[in-house]
Amino acid sequence: MASRQSAAVREMYVRWAQELTDPDLDPQQRVENGEHWADITREPRGVDYSETDEPGRPAMWITPKSAAPDRVILGLHGGGFVGGSLYTHRKLFGHLAKAVGAKALLVHYRLNPEYHHPAPLHDAVSTYRWLLEQGYAAEHIALSGDSSGGGLCVTAVLRARELDLPLPAALLLMSPWVDMELTSETLEANREKDPYFRREFIQPLVDLHLSDGYSPKDPLVNPLYADLAGFPPMFVQAGADETGLGDAQRLAEHAKAAGVDVRLDVFPEQQHTFQMAAGYAPEADDALARFASWARPRLGL
Image 1 (cartoon, helix red, strand yellow):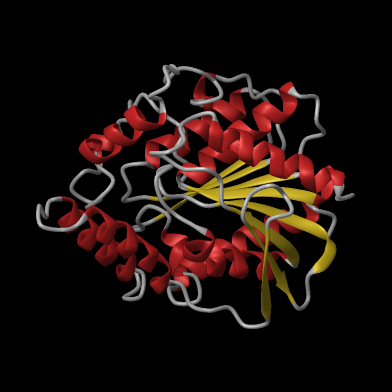
Image 2: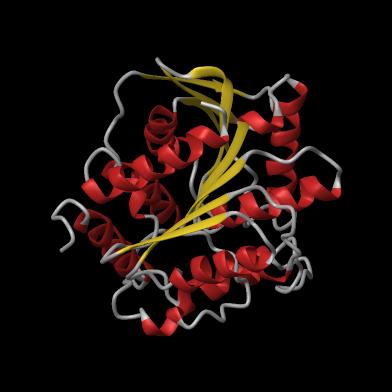
């Protein structure tokens, strides 16, 4: 049975779904309400935060007191390519970095509606390249993201491979959104369990993100069409009740078929990106602990 604390994630999504149908809610207020995403994440102890624009985009160094100085998690926040920020996700990546024993660099990539694909992809790859230029070894870097940020981690590695950059040590993916065609069966099968991430909400995000004429079958948009042979090890997590479960399952299956070292953990009765309740819900803390025990040896820790 799901914990009482984990219900906070679903309650948040219920509120967001109600806002979508409120004709009197000002759009700017909706954006500001989204910044309260972080309210369900508890503040991790012993973690320092420092903002920087050195990578060429607004970013934040997240440094646990016990972090290895030469191991880095590059964090890409979720938000459907229209939302999310350094501030909505700093605590989540603080918990993850602390569990792993590494630093994290959380980057705020360009968002819709001002910027469309491939702007977020370019920002993710340029930040990864910047880390390499600073002397961080690729085998000491992991990429991690939730939802759209999780999918962006995968396409960033694809693009890095095209550019002949050394690939990172591992990918830590939370409810990755990868299918821009919206064909996963769980979109309908889990519709009544998932109060927010439904087709009528997600399709406009796809249309906006691809509004410069890109195909939803482009491998750098939809990695289910990509050749993943030679990819770094990948750990995918998803909630059993989310409509995006099929994306996580299909990505893991696609990676496994390509010979990738991949692990998929599905958490019973959990919602999309339930890890956001880190420090509060035991399921979220368990998920991050699993990430850490899996990632540490792959980062040489």
